[in-house]
Each structure stands twice: as structure tokens, then as C-alpha cells.
Length: 292
Ligand SMILES: Cc1cc2nc3c(=O)[nH]c(=O)nc-3n(C[C@H](O)[C@H](O)[C@H](O)COP(=O)(O)OP(=O)(O)OC[C@H]3O[C@@H](n4cnc5c(N)ncnc54)[C@H](O)[C@@H]3O)c2cc1C
Image (cartoon, rainbow, N blue to C red):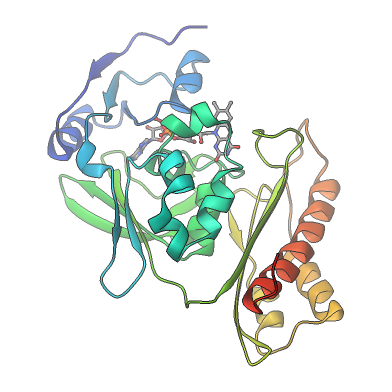
């Protein structure tokens, strides 16, 4: 199919882009990499009167160190940059490792972080990383700038806290303690497919004890999820087989994955538990300096 007719503009600045969003009063879509929007237009899932193409906004294409640690990533930063940037890998090795699982190279060359977060697919990797890494999403409109915690940003499948006149301009990732163990585990039927389930884990381990733990999941709920019960079980303890099993079980408690053509809810829940166990063990090994 072909898209329904639409008007098109390609602004030269963020100011122009947000002015265009405000002028269209909701009947408008931003286009960044177009990797999710174009299929939705072609299938007529969306029929905006206006497309605002933001590809010329090079001012939003950057990765910068933040004062006090962490990284600020411009909304137009491509997936491929997050996958290959040494600056990103130095601070957040889990990001490049995870980005390899996003679609295919051609899509990663075009897709952007702002587009992926705003699209809010419950099985997309970047929204889950934003939850795991406690990112803040910075949005702009003619009304000013708004900072939204990733914990609040994702509301439902393909739905975020963004208002119609807001665009994501930046994502702030606060720094994590040096030496933090990390792991991302995903299962999809074929390389490049959306995940059936995936788990991300960060463990801060000192003197053989887990001081802090973060566990996030995707593909098993309406939004990317943090699993606080599992994190609480891990904190303050040394790792053991029993602990890993308990933490993985807690991570799966209360999950209600959607039914679709690809997997039953029970299968996805089981898969999430297996991946959680693997991810916790692997993050522990990294935190303890054991070669992977
Ligand atoms: C075959 C295929 C397989 C894929 N597999 C995966 C996968 O395994 N994992 C995965 O995570 N993704 C996958 N994707 C999606 C891909 O990663 C997209 O790049 C990403 O979801 C959207 O990024 P984009 O820059 O292309 O956004 P676009 O397609 O341009 O936009 C997507 C949505 O976000 C809005 N938007 C874009 N930029 C902004 C902004 N700055 N502020 C506010 N709203 C904005 C648009 O209006 C639109 O609603 C796949 C896509 C395809 C076609």
C-alpha cells in the first residue's frame, strides 16, 4: 500500500520543527529515520495531515559527556553510532552490546534514539535500556523544555507521555559506578527480529556482595519494565544458585505478556525467567572480573 496524502516540510532548526508541530495541532508526525513511521504510513495505520522531516537537524546528532558523569545523547543519534561509538562503550558497554540486536544493519544506519523511544515498541531495545539506565528524556515544545524520567515516559504500547506538540531533543544517561557488572540477554526467532523476550541486568558488587542491582525486561509487558522485587532480593547478598533462581522467579512474578502469533504468554514468561538467570550470572561474573 501507499501512504494517504500528506503535506511535508523539512525544517532547518529545532525551533522551526516545534513551531510546525504547534501549528498542526496534533494532526502531524515527526519523521526521524522513518524506519517505523514509513511502514505505519504505508499500511495507513497513521494518516497525518503533515509530516515534519527532522533529518536536517544535525544539532541533535551528538554524544557528549555530562558534567558529573554519564552521557547526553542527541535525539537524532543513529542506532549505528550507539553500537560503534567508543565513547559510549567506555561508559556503558551494555549499550553497544544491546544495539547489535536491533533489527538489521540497514535499519540501524537510519533509525534514531529519539524515534525508537518515541515509537515505544514494548519489544524495542532502546526503551528497555532507558529504563535500565534510569535515563531522562528531554522534550521541547513552544512551551519550553520538559524532562521526563524513563520510568514515567512509556505509558502503553506505542504510547508515551509526549504531548502532540513536543519533540524529543535529548536523552540523558546518568553515569554508573565503574566496574558495574552488566549483561543483556535476548531471544528472537531470527537475527534482526523483534525479541520474544529480553533482560538487562546491572550489578554493583563490592567485597563479594551485591550492593546495588537493576533488572529490566522487555517483550513481556505493555512497556519496558523494571523488576524491583527481583532487585530487592539481589541487594545485600553474595551470588549463589539459589539467589539467582529466586531473583529470576521474582522478576517473572506478575508478568502478563500479550498473546500474539509468535509465542504464548506462558512461553514468554518462561523465556524471561531463563534469560534473567543467565543475565544475572553473567553480570555477576563481569562485576567480579571473571573473563566472559
Ligand atoms: C524490519 C524492521 C525490524 C525492526 N526491528 C527492530 C528491533 O529488533 N528492535 C528495535 O528496537 N527496533 C526495531 N525496528 C524499529 C527501528 O529500530 C526504528 O528505527 C525505530 O523504532 C524508530 O526510529 P526512527 O528514527 O526510524 O523513527 P521514525 O520511524 O522516523 O519515527 C517513529 C515514531 O517516532 C516519532 N518520532 C521520531 N523522532 C521523534 C522525536 N525526536 N521526538 C518525538 N517523536 C519522534 C515519529 O513521529 C513516529 O511516530 C525495526 C524496524 C523494521 C522496519
